[in-house]
Amino acid sequence: MTEYTVHGPFRIPVVKKPAGRRISDVSDFWNTGERILLSKRCGIYVFGMRAGKGIVPYYVGKTTNKFESECFQLHKLDKYNEALAEYRKGRPVLFLLARPVKRGQVKRKEVNKIESFLIQVASSKNKELLNIRGNKQPKWSIAGVIRGTQGQPSREAKKFKAMMNL
Image 1: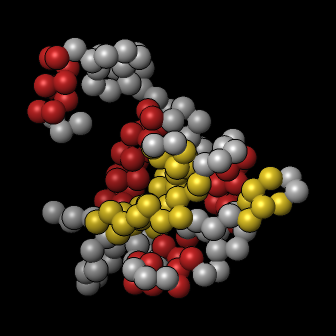
Image 2: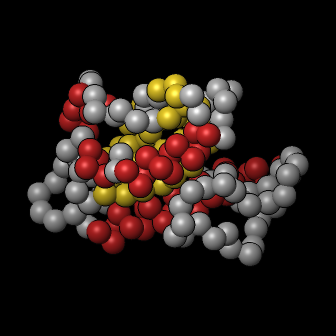
């Protein structure tokens, strides 16, 4: 089993412009601390907005190459800035789920499956998720466990959720 490790949340630098805040200069992002080593790794990344006491996911992406060459491409920055425009005081952050350093080819199917799973999880938390592919919600739910309506989950649902590690 391949075990990915979670790193972050890392703050993404923001500049104030007359039209609002924007993410623009990320040239130094990969030159600090553990990010230096992570920049050359591959895996899944999740862009989110920290507001209040939580973090809302806005985009889930993958790379089978290097985080530094994928996470801040221009079309990704456009998506991140779209999310940033919705928050007056939120701070953009990035999580990296790094694949372990191994010899040989990266298993693309494995990375794709993890990305698809995380897109489904993120879209259940944020209906405004910016991913185009894979964010359609299934037409089923389990009350109090996944994609259920608002309200307190039952005691049984809480136990089931804990048992299934959801």
